[in-house]
Length: 533
Ligand code: MV4
Image (cartoon, rainbow, N blue to C red; front, side, top):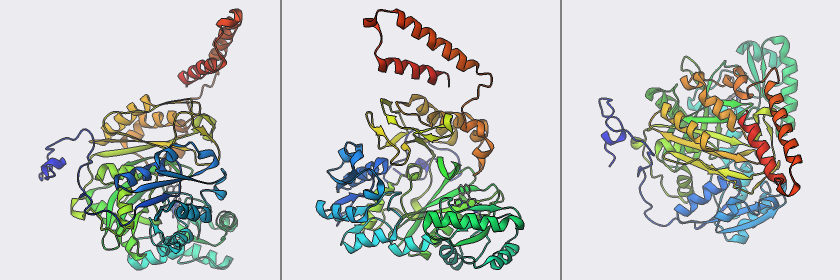
């Protein structure tokens, strides 16, 4: 079944066999015995809660959902075996409340807790509270979360483990003269970063010495506001790198990597499209960065699924940035090219089972891409939009996966993250994956709330993107992809206004009984403006 020839390439590199749909096949063995956990509480909402519930059911585990007042009718609540109300809409009183989540686990008789991503996923104190309540934590050891959460501590550990880090300071900065001295050593341009940071908060680029003091002040106050810790450190600024991350899995005995994800397509630190593998990575480079990531995980005693983020430059230098000690939003692209269910492996590892994968079997096959569909309107600077999902047509067909936590009738509010769904495709190569994604985006219809769907269509149609000419500044250079086509003369707007006015005049002239209902005239209006985008 899985001889080398079947896997796509013969030993001489010739293509022996082409796969058109999914590479998902038994790279993993079937469970030998029931797991020692039986019932998992999912301390999350939306698509990741649903994703974890599905994995639980495949492992024959019961799934307990939790929900805030506005999530009572959500898909994750309906999919679970049981659901427990944990409070009102504000996250601080529900999905971020350690006490309420532990109480819900107790009440439901759960014996394990999966945090998903976001919310409490990377809070070492939550991991400890779960274990103190005699529950199995489906995540890495609290000590590993803590070590990676402190960026200068992480850098120190990485240096000791021989993992390449960005040249820079060895610890938090002291006073002004200390900062100037370290800065001269590193050279400009450099970056001021928050010790407690991550995800881009409390970060400043400094081009020359005169700008250092102001940058230190703003970074420190931003860091204090965001993390309650004002300490900062310095790093050399890496120009135009790619953002490459490596998926790690460890059962405490063995630590393996499952290759890279290319995450350079982002706007203001929010990833929009991810793919696996990366065009920038050869088989050799994959093993070099992969083994650096394995060393990084081992250096903090990692267990479970995790991701090491790297910056990769044009000359193939790579630098460890940080480790995300959780399952990530973009994990599906790795699942599709490696044929491994990462969430099931997380559950099995947490239950004390060995991983069912082996380094020798792990070889990326084909190409996977993910578009994050958010309720953000490119036409208004990506402002979050709200409303009821009035209509939803989900794309389908071979190699198309739709991971969503929302459904028709759901109200999209401003209480939670704006990601509605992830559209993921797999195809035998990148060109076909792009084609498949474009077709899926053409099939997708979401009405009632503005989304970034049109942005994804512009991006995937772009020649530069198709060539793979990307780095983390790609979208900064291409505002034309972010904003819909501008209509400088306003001709289109005028034409639409004239057509609508004429239409309204005609309807007003009709007998009232024949007049369309209000909602359907809104529909028509929306359809017209969509068509003209
Ligand atoms: C950098 C960098 C360039 N040079 N560090 C952004 C979030 C945080 N994880 C680290 N980040 C960066 N660190 C040095 N020394 C550029 C970024 C960066 C970035 C990194 C990954 C993905 C997107 C990014 C967008 C802007 C800046």
